[in-house]
Length: 381
Image 1 (cartoon, rainbow, N blue to C red):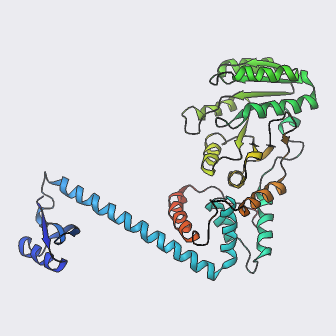
Image 2 (image 1 turned 45 degrees about the vertical axis):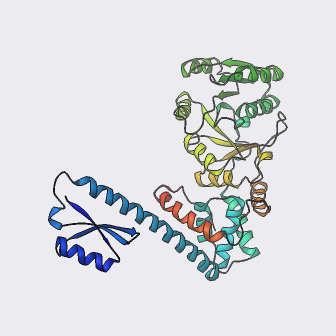
């Protein structure tokens, strides 16, 4: 293909020159500003399929697609901002409800789903009460008496590095000793990566008077579990990995040994990190433990993920004391605390002028997520 560049003071003159040089069936490949007016890349129609000249077309095509993507993004953000302002005037109750959720730290997927289910005619304080009740009903919590300490069995604590698995395991073990006795509880150190992991767990085991066993791989763990069949509760401390680590999915192999997984999530993590943990570690888990609640001024992101993934919450931890800082979850308290987090004034608090911009970013992001949206709450009534 033979592509030519034409420079003219304006598009009309440029197109006239192209027709004169290349004929009426000439094809314009791209245009861009030029110090002398406009630069046009064009080719005769008959030369488009000529071999050996495809690189110019590919370059121009890439430039055109890039420009179209930029214009699409600008238009999308502007339209989303217009839609937000129009929605605020047309349906202020739904917009106010979404603002409350965003300010607290809940994500767009859940916020849009709940706002769409807000009953007509419910607004103001009544809408906030409706929102609170819906969140409380939809937060999955393990029933009293069915938590791991009461139920017994083999449980492995899994999750990201630094989520507090070992300290949480010690709290569970201490609670189990109070319930079943030290001779009915055993600990297994299966973290072969973190230096000092077994030594830390051994200190807890000696203080509690329970047996401690080490397992370097799944085969050794299976053999250890066979010898611990008489114990009421066996707690396994596993290695922590970043969710993106290729070794993270290996924790699911515990299921084949009859071990149930408890996902430990730090309440103060960013929403994206919590979501990745639930996707990589939490699929098929028996329950979740929300750790370090005392370090989380806005725990809404964690509650958001638990609601959407329908993963029940078994325990909450809020400090380093063993076992005093291990608590049964209370949905009312957790939801109220999450909603209060949106009322705290910080440099990260959005102003009224920020909301249209947020709507534009959220709309663009939602397009990428439409094909992989988590389940919407079923009890939004």
